[in-house]
Structure formats: C-alpha cells, structure tokens
Amino acid sequence: MRARTLGAALLALPFVAAGALPGLSVQPGSRVWVDGSSNTSFWHCVSDAPRGSADAGTTDPARIAVVRRAEIVVPVATLECGNQTMNEHLLRALRADAAPEIRFRPRSVRLVRADGGWTATLSGRLSVGGRARRVTVHADVAGENGGLRVRGRKTLRMTDWGVAPPTLMMRSVVVDPGVTV
Image (cartoon, rainbow, N blue to C red; front, side, top):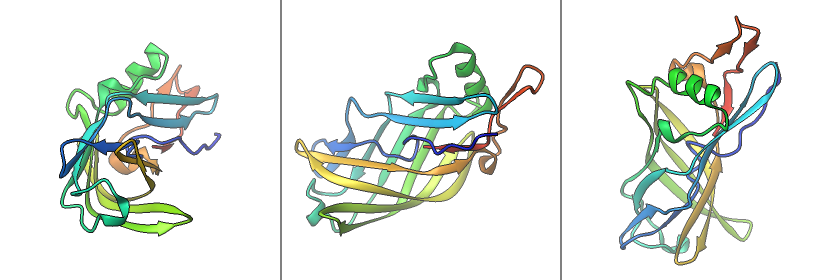
C-alpha cells in the first residue's frame, strides 16, 4: 500500500475571516480537504461548506491574547470525492447517518511569531464518526482582507476514531487508514 500525506482537511482550518467583531467566522470560499490512498490509487475529497467561529476579539495576530472559544464543523455529506461510488463509501465509513458532522473544538489556541508570520497551535477535541479524541494541529496564520487566513494540516489514522477504511471489489482494493486533513 502506498502511504500519502493528505492536503488540508478537517483539521486544516482553511481560513477564518472576520465577521462582526469580537467574533470571527469561517467565510464563504473556505475549503477543507482529505487526501488518502489505497493499494491502487490516491484519492482526494473536498468540502466547500465548512463553518465555524472563534472569539478572538481582533483580526490582528499580534494582538490576539486569548481565543475564548473556537469551533470548525464540516458536514460529512459535503465531502465531494469526484466519484459517486467513493462518496458513498466515504459517507458509510464515516457513519454520516449517525454522525453527520465532523467537529473540531480547540480548547487551547497559542499564537507565536515565526519566520515573518505567525503560527498557531490548536489543541482540542476532534469528533469523527461519533467518536472524539484529543488532537493538536499546527497552522500558519496571516492577516488577509480584514480577516485571518489559517492553514494547517494533520495526518490522522481513521482507525483511531473507529472508522474502518473502506474496501472494494472483494477486498482487492483496500484504503490505507492514514489520511491527511
């Protein structure tokens, strides 16, 4: 099986832009993607419908002292893989009927200046398929168009959330449990 690091998906926090201060909200055009592989090919699924918010009080990374609350939600049904069969297998594997959303709730957000920009460390609970686990995500943060752009990636193992990697054609195609979000 080929291993592959995925793009930036569920935990990537594609971008958080300013809403009505003091809150920030995920803006239209934000994307979350999940990449993985099987023993025959690579796959790529994207959601253009993440939603979420954060209470940071400002859009200036230098002035963000505390993020009181934050949440990113990805409706599972919005993950599009470019192939209806793959979409169906993904929805089934993620138990979309019982757990229709993937949700990341950082409990701790720390920003530090790095290489002329900012990096964030977000630690909290990621819920996938009805199960929650603690994760830490590292992301780049930049001021953009009066808001913030947050980009990060996290490599995960589906099986850590009790998600069985799909198999097809009598197990001749087996999906690797490692994905990058």
